[in-house]
Image (cartoon, rainbow, N blue to C red; front, side, top):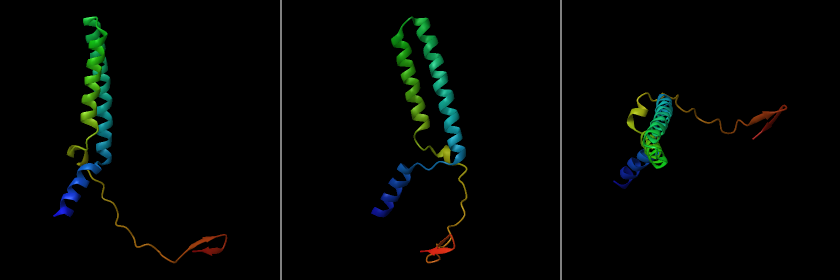
Length: 102
């Protein structure tokens, strides 16, 4: 029972995402940061208030962090099928300049 809970917690905190998920995260974060920055600048210019610009920019950064940092399931839709591990070749040693090193 405790092992199952530990495994679930480990899966939750490890954050498995695939390569396509990494690409999606990069695109989302780039567009969200750029869009929120432009929106904050325009809103600050219209309001003539630097605090509005800063708070809207901070909110956009927080939204970007919420979208990009957690390992959402949509970021692991194309997992990579890795080859199985081969047995290690214990005792074969390494050959350097014609001499075998163990």
